[in-house]
Amino acid sequence: MPLAMNNEVFITCAVTGSGGTLDRSPHVPRSPKEIADSAIAAGKAGAAIVHCHVRDPETGTPSRDLKYYREVTDRIRDADVDVVLNLTAGMGGDMIFGSPEAPLPLNPKGTDMVGATERVAHVAECLPEICTLDCGTMNFAEADYVMTNTPGMLTAMGRMMTELGVKPEIEAFDTGHLWYAKQLVKDGVLESPALVQLCMGVPWGAPDDLNTFMAMVNNVPDDCTFSAFGLGRNQMAYVAASVLAGGNVRVGLEDNLWLGKGELAQNWQLVERARTIIENMGARVIGAQEVRNKLGLTKQAPKG
Image 1: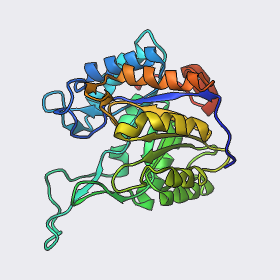
Image 2: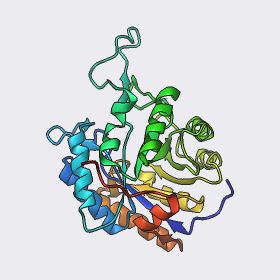
Image 3: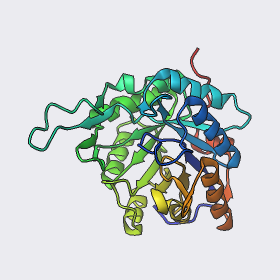
Image 4: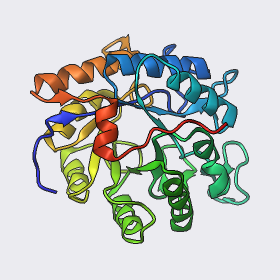
């Protein structure tokens, strides 16, 4: 991919995620209303895309419950700000093994393995413009947790997304994930040009040093649109790095809780900070409809 700074940049806000962050910041939204309100505020601050997981409102644990996704969707669609909705489809591929001496049976606490249709059920119900497709299997930071996305599963999920008219956002945590994403396009499972999110610094995927980042960028096909993010303290550095490398940006409380040393952030503040960086670099931040036009997205009404 030829290096050229991106002069028309869209911001994605990753609103809540599925990590155990609720006990570390009071600003991480939990209920569908809180998630939608935070997404709407991020849109008003300049985010063209809002990337949403949902949580159980009582416990804060990550959820796949359709009614939570539908409430978030309806609240965002009814808001007075226009944003592109991006729902996760990463849930339902979580394996937690037993001890190193007895890996099987799997640990039922935290293991969540379901079929492709169930993993995409909320996408079929809510019909967002975008949903994520985690394009590979990897060890996560937790000792015996494996994010599991086999080629067969990814093919089935990718076909369902394409048939629904929802654009998959390929989440690539390492270079091999990009390699397989290219195969999905070649096989006709995903339509070209593809949308790619480079996920940097997520243990134990691609580290967030610039050499690795550029290896990831150089593996993105020329006709694809990409964004990138870094975790924690490197989130804002990756805003600048991604724009310089020709990409778009992602910020939000899924990836980073801090605005500055000792200062917990809200989503709209992270978007505002990213927007300032982008505009100070001489680029323009584009809105939701421009993103739909650029990526060929269709805004659909939820079912029913």
